[in-house]
Amino acid sequence: MAEVKSHEFDGFLKRKPLPARLFLVYGPDRGLVSERAAALAAASGVDLADAFSVIKLDATEIGSHAGKLMDEMNAIGLFGGERLVWIRNAGSEKGVSDALEMLTAMPSGDCTLLIEAGDLKKGSALRKAAESAAQAIAIACYADDGRALQALIDQELSAEGLRISPAARERLMETIGGDRLASRNEVRKLALYCRGKEVVEEQDVEEIVGDASAISTDDAIDAILKGDREGFLHAIQKIVSSKTPVFLVLQGCLRQFQLLEIMRAEMDEKRAPAGQVMATLGRHLHFRRKPIVENALKAWTAPAIRRESQRLQAAILQSRQRPALEDTIAMQTMLATVLQSGRR
Image (cartoon, rainbow, N blue to C red; front, side, top):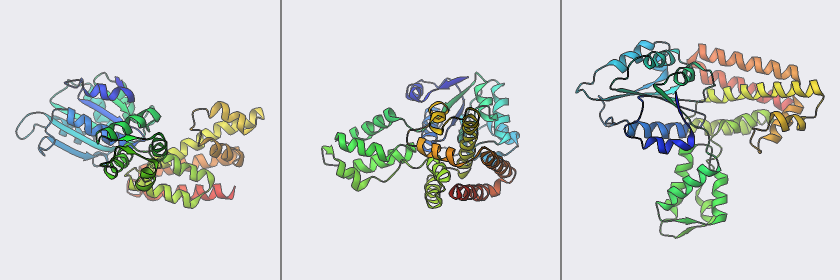
């Protein structure tokens, strides 16, 4: 397996031809997943304007039927030549992971497979199929860090011959970062607004740039932990608008409660304060989230956290068994958790 790290992607894309024909692009930043998948498609050498050469499918169309994807991969184009099969919104669909596993055991042909997926757990069937094969390349897409955001700002503004003042840069950094496409669109909007000027000032940012930092599952999860019903609904609205599946929020909520369960057990076993446990088991959390998680840790008892984790797990299983009701199940479950948090 060749794993391409985030900072290596631009260099990898310049390799001609690309060293593989099976790609899995996944992660919580759906905008970045979409952007990198489009870049890989453009670099594949396939004519993207040719409807006979590019087959786009939603993962739900494949479901558990690996044969459908295998048929598409083995089909011959109407006019011959290379083809691209592009799968979107992949997750736990057995047919997609099974087909990928079969394809990695076969000699590579003239067809490229490109799979866009959400935030996949390590050990999930789809990640396992890609990561255990030498013929596949897995590309993880996580929210941009400070360095990546700085590079994005400089790239977009310099293309319009603009510079940006330190104060404006700092203000802009506060409002972007949750989703790559949303962030890029906001910077492009700013550049268009400032066309004809030499320097972007802080006032320009405040007048034209919206909040693109909150298109992230973290904001919805934090609202759940705080018992903030209105904040949760606002975050969900932005998530839906960004085309991010609501199911990812449910998954993230479960992971958060699983972490709370571990932390609370550590507190009870060692009779340690929440702050001390956060300093060890919560080091990886963003500094803005730490006070929220610490307060939740104080408010929830171990048995209550365990019950909530079990309820979230049951909801995830139910949503997988009844995909048509996935969003409804996720929303009802998380709203119930928000109310539970509010009571505490």
